[in-house]
Image 1 (tube, rainbow, N blue to C red):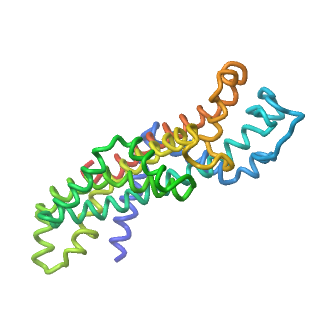
Image 2: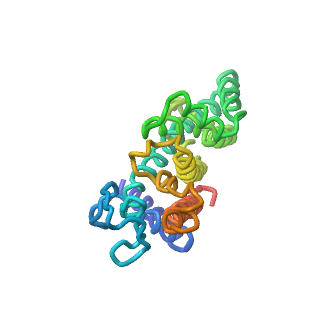
Length: 287
C-alpha cells in the first residue's frame, strides 16, 4: 500500500515537472486561473457595480478612476467585464464539462459494445454534425429561448459529439489490448474494465475536447449575446458588453467599449487553449 502511494506521488511529481517545463501551458494556466479568480472576487477587485448608472461620468475614456472607461450610461467597463466573466465562464465551463461527460459515457458504450449500440450512437452523432454548429445553436435558441441555463443546455446538446467520437475511437483501439483480455480472463466485469482500466487512457482526448469546447463556447456566447440571442441584456456577460459596439459611432469614437472586452475574450480563449495543450501532453499515457 505504501509502495503504491509512493509510485502515485512520483508520477504526480513527474507530471507537474513536465507541465512546468511547458512555458506556454503554464502561462495559459496562470492567466486562466487569474481571470477566473478576478471574476469570482469582482467585488473585491473593483468598488464599482456593473449596473450602477452615473450620468455624470458617461462615456469617459480610461483613467485612473475608471481603468477601462465608462459606457454611455456611466457604468464602469472594468466592473462589467469582471462581473460579466462570471456568467460567460460559468456557461462555457459547465456546458463543456456536461458535454464531455455525456460524450465520454456514450463513446465508451459505443466503442466497447460495438454492433447495434455503436451504429445507433454514431448515426445520432452524425445527424447532429450534419448541421453547421452555429446554425444548430440558433435553431435551439429559437426553441428553448434565452437564459443562462438554456444556453448551458444548448451547449451541452451541441457539444457531446466531439468527445464521443474521440473516446469511441480510443475504446475501439484499446479494447483489443492484451491487458483487457487478461481482465476478462480474471472475470472482471465489463463496467469495471471500461471505467477503471480503459477510460483513464482516454483522459487526454477528453481534456483536449473539453478545453476546445470551453474556448468555442466563450466565443459562441459572445456572438449570440452580440446578436441579442444569448443571455438577456439585463445580465452582464462579455457578449452583452460587446453588444454596445454595434454602432459605427461607438466603434469610431468610444474605442474602449469594444477593445477591452474583445481583448479579455481573446486572452481567455488563448489561455484555455494553451492550458489544454499542456494538460494533454501531461495526461497522455503514451507520452
